[in-house]
Image (tube, rainbow over all chains, first blue to last red; front, top):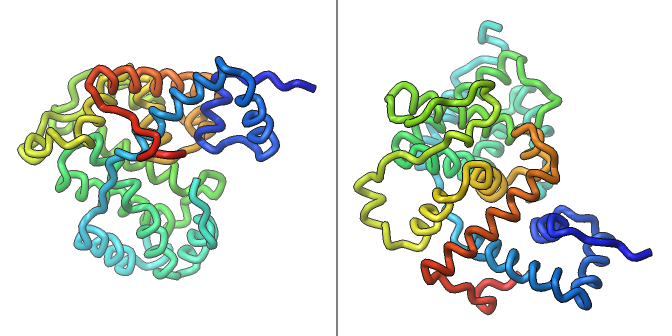
Length: 81
Length: 199
């Protein structure tokens, strides 16, 4: 049975939210469906740009230590419900 | 989403049983993700650190008082706390420019970034900053999905649940966000080189 893939399926594929079987079928479809393949290339290009340039940063050690020390200072079930 | 050898729910269970080491693992596992999401809203690292600490104070209080709901996933729950605190921050400082949602469900519909800090002006030419500016230009619904997927690393199912739309709608918004970003990047001469960014 031929499976029809939609542009939204490309998003599921790019973001790794497809089953392996689905992904394999989509990869096969991309080999002969030029329109879908072109849409995939465009979406994947933008995805890679966002991923490669994604801004990520760590909080300071001071902030993390404050959090850990706060937790240690609080007894289990000591807080009013 | 990244898989860990010990799940979040197992670490929460250990923490509830008194293991501070389990809590430390949870904090170290998610601190960058939560901090970055908060920072993208408040755009000031000191404020973001304060809000991160406030977020975890609520997490500690909720778990240690036995009020943590096991049904929900840990990270989306902490992310929601962080977002609510960030929005509250804008309300208190009167820096939040628009009326916030009626039902409280769709915080990003009115999300805006704060004014540029001196620090961000200095790094304006950085491509990270440029990308952030392009993301800011996306329509609200598309920006919402993009931040939740890329920065908060929520699945499309979790995004759909959080925003009250179908998975298909969330997928469609992500697709248009990428299409629009690509157009904007082309307009700004940010070239995509598949040799540099292979899938």
